[in-house]
Length: 428
Image (cartoon, rainbow, N blue to C red; front, side, top):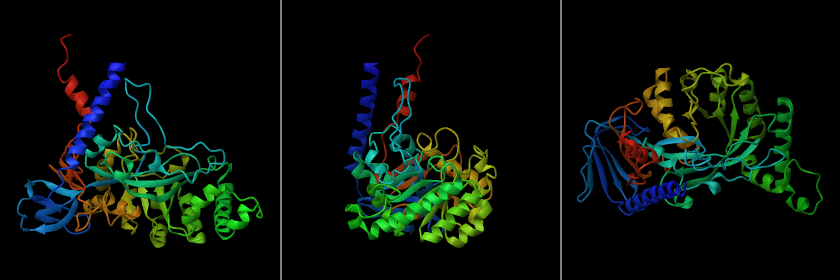
């Protein structure tokens, strides 16, 4: 067992060494001759993307290649922004393997009142997670990392999948607060009681902001949460931090929109199995929605209206749609990479190709408040770029080059290592 563990450790060290070495090789790069899909503008045939010091400095047709630039010939290939999977637990959880008794799971705080608002997802991320490389090899360059469980789960972060430390990886911390519309998790017993508790909590957050000194001097009534949790919720109550609400049922989504309007909150819906039923209301309220497109089988009675046209119907109504994983096989961690198949399915069920690409690049970047950094091939953005050997929404298409911040990602995944190890079976 020890030998196996040491071998695994060596593999991880090799991958980190590769990442470190390539980080030092950041330079001027010109990706030429491909069909470029910027995600925030029209397709560019025979396009060129020029990168310098990890940033995109030019995108267009017939651009002159700078002297000394490393040229990447993308003739016959497709060039897109790095894909953004906005809703994952990557780095917070790890799948178990045959040599381990199980993976780790740092996604959930242990609390008794259901409120863990001060939980900061970025603080628990393992930068050596074996889940990163399988994601980057399939074109994922940026992820939203979120806690799970409880009623108020905590705060999410956005990370580029490169770097040896969390500080190197993080694009932005505290991008939003996650709340589950789950009466049990809220210790409320019923939806109506949960909505009442949520209103009480939001009122108390505002009271706490106005009366901190009195609170500290024990001159207020008891509030609905501890001071650390109220403090963490202040940006939500002030409207400077979005509230991401996990809700599937149409009536729950409508209730979330109503409470957001009542308290002037910035709302994002996550899950949204029945969101298509209230698409017009979401569009009017300008509420973005994060939905999957692979699975249309209801897992609960809250999702009886789930359908695969959900994303396209929402988009047709004018809703800002982000595609996230709802397919089988751990879509929040191991199969984060499958978000491009979610996009392909969304196209099969009525969404335009351009909207589907936007739903896994620019739209999630906007919903997470990092559109000035990632999600598009545009001047000034980080050089997160993928070159594909075909349509990225086709199952058999492969990413031939994946750049994050202008650095080619070359490390091997554990899958690659295991494939090489067992390609030639011992004589049996």
